[in-house]
Image (tube, rainbow, N blue to C red):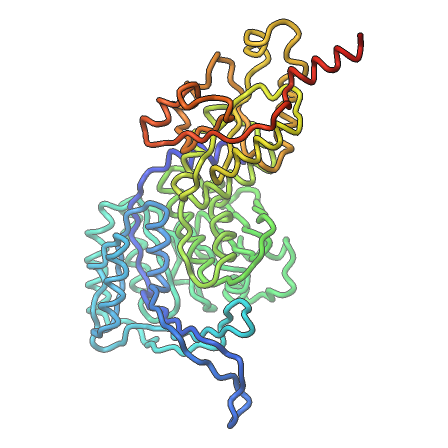
Length: 496
């Protein structure tokens, strides 16, 4: 899909409401240095330094959905213990409704103890994990309570997500009860399945999102030898046997495979990334699909966005929710690489807004930049130092002729854009045809308006606009004797 379409979609994102049912658990991380072996056994010793508790499993899906601006209702089972209270508090802290987490005194709150070691100042690495859990199926009474809660929550939901880690919560009767309930309310059901060999409990769902190894296990295939044709056969078999509408198969570095019932398969390749940790990638795919569909994107766009989100997730350590603006900026970055630095004003407004929401400072300058010389290069470097990103507003050919007279510009607009775009100091170029850049300043609202120090503060065109919303004016040094006019004059002198 063209980047511009995705940018418009993300910039006009609306809040959806998603109900998440599944295995809510906690991830406890113990961090320390692992620089020596135990004297009594050939095992590394972790010198613990700090600990942290993070929501995991279905709780991580809930956090991912909140990062994507969704309202989230959480339905699941926890123990009657202090860990359950911490988990609820973590979910409430980010705005999730955790009132649907039922306390069951007969089972503990699931917790994964992750021991993370750092050696010789390298990246932290997971050394091993200890799990505290119960995999026994829910009692009928607790399952019925969950169904009753779901019936109430789903009446206000756009989508139902089932996140199954095989901890006994999503039993076949509960899954089937939830799917039938959602179908009755005409609500799509998305399932991130457990690593099990029988998917019958998910039959009738709208979509499932297994990875290649989970799909191979569920279909009795060999994942290691699976080529594209084999992956498609696995997916179609699951669609047929489970009566699904859609299957999204996650393929690690290869991206995603989207299969519609009765439609042509579509592989969605991922952009090359530095894979650091795959933890949480499946949760992120489920959350992004759900949030996208709640925005009416359709499956192809939803899958493309899920692919972007999963790619960002694997670049970080642990399960860290990917914010909507991070996804927008990643799409913008891809668009930047594909289409260069030139933008229209309408394209630039949402891009800069997304950068600002990520805490970036926008610097802005304007000019003709007709014959680019050392003075220009020095000036633009100084302008770029005033912010995280530099926007250069370039006078159009017509406006330069009006300002400078006949014979100018020497270099036409397209050439000037190309040369400016080649400079590392310049992040964006926008062309304007008015006498002044005031219209751009009002719409773009840069943090810093940059001009050369040959102008006084009051001579900087648009200073009152920028200062009216709290921006500032920066006057940077100009290189003496360097100007396009002087260059043209010297060329003329030599010709005579």
